[in-house]
Length: 131
Image (cartoon, rainbow, N blue to C red; front, side, top):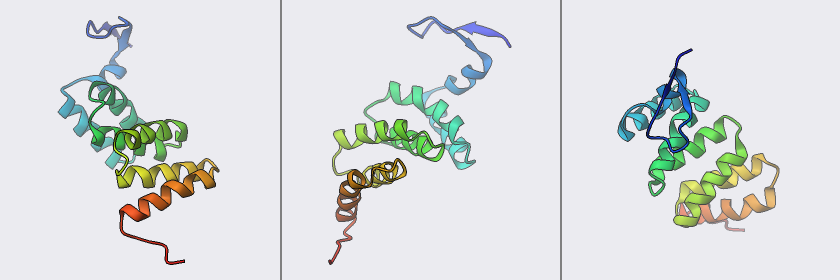
């Protein structure tokens, strides 16, 4: 496998052709590539494309949320949780991030902590528990 040198990286680490595939192109091209991987249910590949993209545009919710979903679906739950917490910290009323955070915590066996986020997500969606 050939390696090349990417001068734009601070670490100056050699990259394989495979890793260049995930980082090649404009942010918009990489966003579309990640969405294609996600749509094909190749969640690990989607995450490989999205992780560097999120580092480039940390203020954008869309790529970070899709990265969290890719981590969730590929059972990388701690990573999913970290991305979702970053979204919720920046935008506390982001309904879907709250819901995903609750589901992620549930999958980790942290039901009590999950319940808070799931209740908030339900309230944002207009679904109130009558009991």
